[in-house]
Amino acid sequence: MSSQIQLPPRILRAIKANDFPTPYYLYDQVGIKQTAGSLSMALSNTGFDYQNYFAVKANPNPHILDILREEGMGADASSGPELELARMADMTGEAVMFTANNVDPEEYREAYRQGAIINLDDINQIEVLRSALGSEFPETISFRYNPGSSRKAGHNSIIGRPEDSKFGLPEHDLIEAYQLASKYGAKHFGIHTMLVSNELDVAQHIDTARILFSKVAELAQAGIGIKFVNLGGGLGVAYHPDQKPIDYKALSSGLESVYREMILDKGLPPLRIMTENGRHITGPHGYLVTQVRSVKLGYEGRRFVGVDATMADLMRPGMYDAYHGIEVLNPEGRRIVDQAVVGSLCENNDFFTGKDAKYRPLPEMEAGDIVVIRDAGAHSHAMGFNYNGKLRAGEYLLEPDGEIKMIRRPQTREDYFATLSW
Ligand SMILES: *Cc1c(COP(=O)(O)O)cnc(C)c1O
Image 1 (cartoon, rainbow, N blue to C red):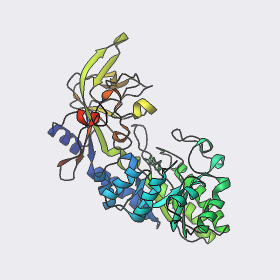
Image 2 (tube, helix red, strand yellow):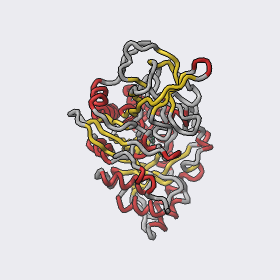
Image 3 (cartoon, rainbow, N blue to C red):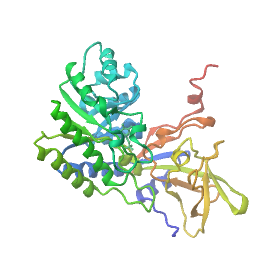
Image 4 (tube, rainbow, N blue to C red):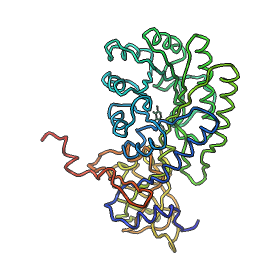
């Protein structure tokens, strides 16, 4: 293994040139735009009327949403604050899809006022929505479908078995739900599902389309014309160097062929195709920058490199044993040794090298080193928390001209105490 830095040169330059207090997050606008543009182009080239609705929860910042709106994306929101973030980035109307579970009726009102496409998670939500809206009902409505055990592809490890999932309408409620919504005045219908997460296997995504297209045909027979299909998010990120990134060609040609076979060749009207990928779009373009505070030598030479970030800044390795690439600035000439990179939380899965994997061969680190944790652009800062009185890190955006803009300041002790009654 070579001790060479693998970071893109513009990221390395930006990190070396500034002295922001660590830990902090840095996002790469150029990279985000490239990924957003390539995905949209790959799927639009098939002739699909295609749009990705970025899952706001992956990186809930209006500056990020602004970039994605410019790339033609909409927003997938699941709460009032997420709807508001979308509004801050001028995303309203059908550029927003509201997909939530166990919803506060006030959030339905907010989504409706914003003109968002509302996606219901259960047949009982039809009445909840109607009463929230004072007996009005949206003209456009979508339902989230849970295929249960009819899904044949392997189960995705993050989401698990559909029949054990709390999300979506079971088969036996689906047709009745559309009929009831139609009775209440809905005129345009969509269908949605979300079956996989961080999935790099294109076949699984194509299988999701197959499942939804077969429902479109069934609903057409029951007199329900589906206008749009939302395949959900879940396109993966190649976090580990042994993983292969999503093959856009295979994805688009696979989707195109099931679309042709199951929709066009059956004489069904063309569909609008939507996805709601978050991770795939911003995940590879975020960096958590942290500094080594101290190195502890434990039993049998075990080396614990303590950094100033914690699992409260990035919980994926501690929660899912997720792999994130780790790089040390100026690694040249260092020995490669097994090390655990750990935070300062009073919690023993606070390992950036993974709660189970624990140790990883990395350039030997010392106090003062700057360490960069890669692929932290989605579900990273957003999942942060304040346990142990840890304050949330600041977030910065590296712009195409090399300027760095603060897009969220670091949390202060005052912020942390602001909600305390004392
Ligand atoms: C979390 C979520 C997404 C986004 O998932 P990614 O892994 O970021 O693509 C999309 N849709 C729904 C309903 C979700 O809950």
